[in-house]
Image (cartoon, rainbow, N blue to C red; front, side, top):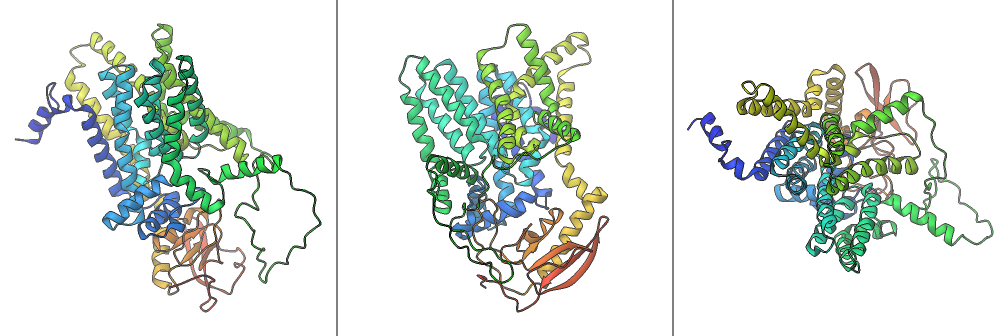
Length: 545
């Protein structure tokens, strides 16, 4: 049997795909994600400095460095399991974990769309999710954000069922599972999920029932989140999902129990070399949100912020979804269940943007924070596409045949997958990107061959910045953050223990805390750099072989 004949048999109206659409879409997502992961050999900054080293620490049983209070634990734990099972690097483990989660999201999304609309909308809407370039790219790079899609899809599915009947006890377990996945993967979901739980409690009360199901599901969610809460309790003294919530907790404690006036205490002088005395608690020197002013911004930055906010809805499918919503409202076809989905999508975007403004006090937003929830709106995108195709077939039935539709779908797969592979392609075609890629790889290779010191050290815990224990430690500017990981060590923007190598632009003063030797000069995309190496024998406190 030829490939074309096999394809025709599989995609026939009574073929295997027609009877197993969700499984077929899962396999398609797995294939696309694994393909991107296979060609992506240069880790993203967050993967190189956080997730990959943490996954490797998890696989090695180094628990103090496998978890961190600023980084929810689920993604690196899944990646670490792959590292332990298959003996692969943390980068490879992160990519496998992200691709698997990306593919698993197919099932709750398909169920959600089928429940709210119908089977046809379900498979088209989920197909749009699978080919979404940004989500494919996130999976191929090994980032954690697809876990947000999985969490919110499970929660939205539970909400749609509960808004019809708040006494469906089993569905509360689905809500608890989605909540646990969300809290242990993205801390910005905590506020969103809290408001959702409040709404669920109100629905159950409105159904003339004591909210025991909501309370029981909350206990189940807390039980599922318990490992993450206990880890942070041990590390920073607060059972919270993220160290930023510990900061808020600390601020509330200080307001409720202000410290009594006490005689001034003498502060010990800094040690030789200018090091500050160690704080008694990891959170002692914390600057609590709201204590500093909002950073100023220009009109151009405001325009970029608004543009990013709307791009977070993935405009390629978001605009058709918006048009479909407007049309359904005008025709009075917009259902209560659709209102629930719209509230989750829009509410999530607004609350995430507000949290950054309130907590970080500056105008910043990334589409990566918002796009993982955009697939909930792809059901409306499917409705728009179905209606448009029906109009076209009525207008020119001889042109717009099922064969043409299959060709269009195949073209969409190729086009969006090519867009997802864009960053990898640019590493070899773009003058700037390829120069930075080669610069990172060549510098990492040189450091790996040159370094002869200890392989590990014990950095002190910083509750807001993760530091790997692997050496050499390379202090680098932002565009070289992958260098340390690729060299078999770690990179950071500032060093714990002084660092082993420091990369500076030519003309900058020599690094402090020496002695240092300038060992290499090189040029990378219009910038000249100098690599400084700690002189042999300078040592590092806490290092071991």
